[in-house]
Image (cartoon, rainbow, N blue to C red; front, side, top):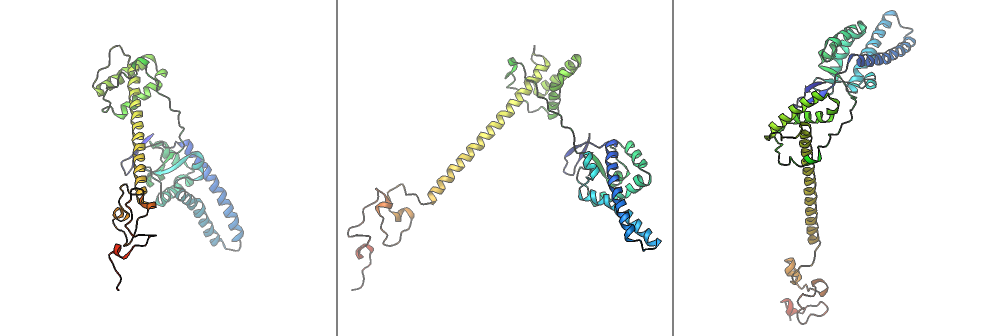
Length: 327
């Protein structure tokens, strides 16, 4: 496995393809391209039967360049580095930084492939791939590309064995903030594979990892506690803290969502015109009321003041409005 640093300073772990898988993918591609070239040649032979020898030679060269050179270039460009053979073998052509290839990369690879694959029957490509540390042929070197494996067998992750019951919760006060991720990974790998190791090798590895972990936490290894059990107990404590942190975050999010929903319902209830709490008339509660408006018992409620004298059926006398018609 090789590591590549992208332009965003992200380290990618890629698996370069080996020579056997690349040779199989190339054989599939050559078989497909060869069959296409034969079909095109037969079609051109019938279509150009009346042409002279010079025209036939020109048509043959054009068909060769179009099918055997232009075809693979077009396929790799459009499929972002996955030809039919590479797709069948789980391979893909990528840039050195792990990104998808473009037309210029496919063009350089195709042009160099004519020399190192077609003209030399793949001998130069095989030698260059064997010499290169990452299995690259000359076309990959000049184009700045790499053939990697896309389908990697995913191993089943082994569970970390639990610590002894008498050690659960004993290391709740440890400060684990200074422990790097690389040390956690090493401890986890040891715990998942300690039964597969030799007894002496496993014991020495556990002692070394426990010493590094105790140095990072600032608390020495307790007396009478085996190194393997100590590692399992500390890893269990870290997992318990992570689980509690996730649970608390989920609870806070749910509570925040509930309070926001309650506030939204209160605002919406006020917006649709709920009755005022105080017994003020509608004009005072709303801040404005049209002249001559009279609060009714059905709207103002039981605490509303009685209408002024002389008001009947919603008709207000002239004295109540402060306006008298001319005599």
